[in-house]
Length: 115
Figure: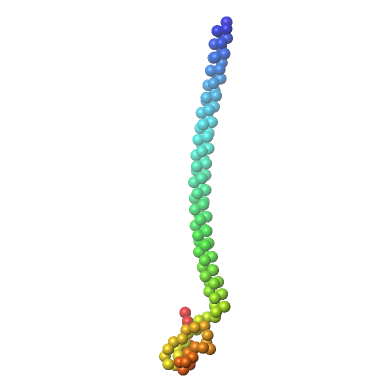
C-alpha cells in the first residue's frame, strides 16, 4: 500500500511539472518578443537622435553666421568703418580716420570705395 501511495505521489508531481514547463516556454517566447521590440525601439531612438543632431548642426551654423554679423557691426561701431583714399601724389591711404588721410602727401585727390 505504501508503494502504491508513493507511486501516486510521484505521478502527481510529474503531472504538475508538465504544465509548468509549457508555461516556461511561453514566458521565454514572450521575453524574446519583448527583447525584439526593445531592440526595434532602440533603433528608432537612434534614428531620431541622428535627426536631432542634424537639426542642431544646422542651427549651430545659423547661430555662427549671425554671431559674425553681430561682431562685425560691433567692431564698426567701436572702431569706425575703414576709409580709403587716393592722395594727390598718387599714394593710397586706408584707415579709420578721414582727418589724417593723406597727411604729408598733398591731401586727398579722391575718396575710394571700400569693400
